[in-house]
Image 1 (tube, one colour):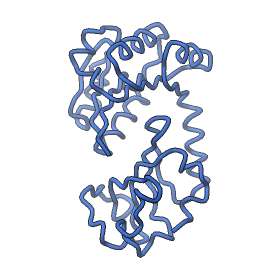
Image 2 (cartoon, one colour; image 1 turned 120 degrees about the vertical axis):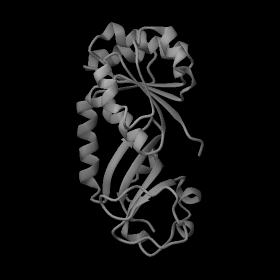
Image 3 (cartoon, helix red, strand yellow; image 1 turned 90 degrees about the horizontal axis):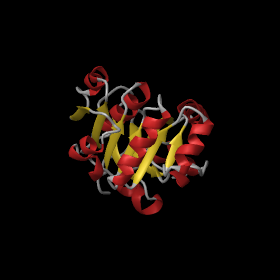
Length: 222
């Protein structure tokens, strides 16, 4: 699967969390904010950062935002500025734009202005917690866009003792395994031995199509 590029505009608590998590999973991220303190907060994690005014089309263009596959506008303090930022990234040709909103009314306005997806973080977090509770194996879930999510989970019981090659997850389910952790707090291993059997203390990190996540019995299948 070709590596996607992401631009995160706004590095408050929500935006910084999105940017850092994407970087953690080896995604290419451009992290931007008008506040230098916020930029410095993520600069150790993310290689490409800048202090920039999102309403300035020229600055966004110069930083290569138009080359990104997805833009996340994570600053929602001023609706007018958010709308201008949305128009700027759309004019730059970014094919998919996710925008943070403060209210349902703002969400409706932003969708009408061309946003591909609008999130209300508190509501989305509630849904995320519910998904974690439903599946005891699910450790973390990041919704990338309408089609894909990055999932980290304990190795499902039916997969224990089998290897990634044998499970053939990409062919059977369209799942791309991008890493393994040998145990809960260990570093993510990108260069995996796919012929080595999985064991019950490992965590597996995958890019999964969202419709598969909706099939509640999926992870009970071997």
